[in-house]
Amino acid sequence: KTTYRALLRELPRRSLATPTPLHASVRKMYEEQTAAASKIGKTGGSSDADAAQQDTLAHRRQEAEQFAQYARAQRQYAALVERYNPGSWLDEEERIRLTARRVGLDLPVEGQGQKE
Image (cartoon, rainbow, N blue to C red):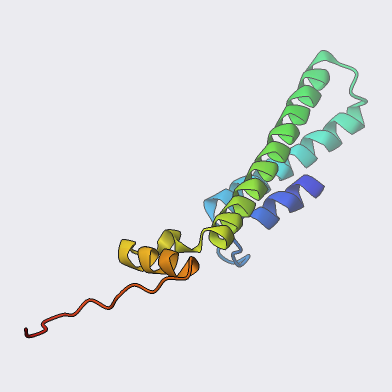
């Protein structure tokens, strides 16, 4: 349940009326896991098939946890790049001007169409 919530936190927010295919896939996977876990719990989980299914469920849960951690890391990375490298989305002239201002220089204004 916590992994499911962590995944939903990292995915882009959408309304419940129009979920993305990724949201639908995550929900379906967790519904299947819940149904399979309750089935194993009712039968006692003693057969080889139940043991194999438990291993599969544990593996899928680990993959979901890893994906949630990866998505969280990517979101934090994007926030850090935006914070510490704010000129990355600017054009080259504006980036040069901001770099010069950062070290205390003002670039001269280029005259456009000046008569001599």
